[in-house]
Image (tube, rainbow, N blue to C red; front, top):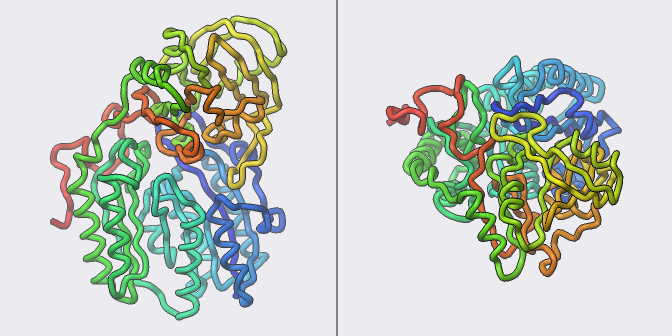
Length: 495
């Protein structure tokens, strides 16, 4: 059987000022046909797991179609979406026919001309390959699943955990696709949505309340007739017409059962909605003081309002300013996306001392920049060591500067690399050294897994920004209303 493999992924933050144009995809490398090397070591990715399992079967031929992935940010431009969609469709035309298509999406992409570009993309792929070709879509579980997506794909699979286990999701997608093809079945599917959004602070699946919902999904998968269950706590900053939390159930040709189980899951998460709005984050001054007072080990400070992993600009200096104000005694590492500052430090050169304007290079709505006297410690081209599964390793011209006991890693371009200890390696800093480093700021609200082995304590910091936890403060325009917690009269439509 011939299976086409493609990735077209971006997570949209409707409130982010960072436009996602074609250049944003090209910085990560748009790969078409044989340029998309399936033999590459994608060990931290869903593609890698899918490829390994598929390659173990003698009856499978994998055909690379397209790889296009941009980091989380603002809406995708119409021209970028249409260009990349046409690249994919053309590759399907010239490489087909196919027995199946494996499509790696995020699921929370929005374009400036279309709320549901991934639904449109799946419709286009379905029209191109016809009804006889299986389409399996791997998605993030923070996706906004839509009726168009459900109608065009044979199966959609979301992550089972947060932090995400990409290989496990890729393997599950492979299992379901091969089961459908080997058994010759077309699953029945039902989706139900809860009219709710919540902040990210309760998104970890290792503890209630989110664990309660995800555990129910796993239990339902053990029931007779059930093929797959995916639960989707939509990411909190997506302002689209079909917004809301989704439960999807696939069964063996039993649509009534699928719908009843989807309702059961939706009732469950609706009952948890107030618990899911509990805030764990602490004020900035308290967070910095606690971290600096830690007796041993590394304290990770989550800059919740400036999560690059959630589409924010990465240029908030709220935590940095407080570290400087408190004159922290322990060594602190702070990543910052600030092209002008990175270039200025690079031009000054290593060893230079200068007054440098830091932060809020893209958007000052959520705070002001600061000016600090810094020493330029190191200048690099921003090329990180290899991080398997990370789309782009280059941050552009970068510089490490010191102010007091704070090392600031300045990058010209946004990249999720700063969630990884390897980000600091290219500056010659070991971010995992428990004896030397007291605290590390991460520009993410939930992807802490890369520092887990060295973290003594994790503190969520209540910071303002495009990914802040106070979702009621955003100017929502497109969400279906009423919706919790914005409207007191929000209710399930089937109870």
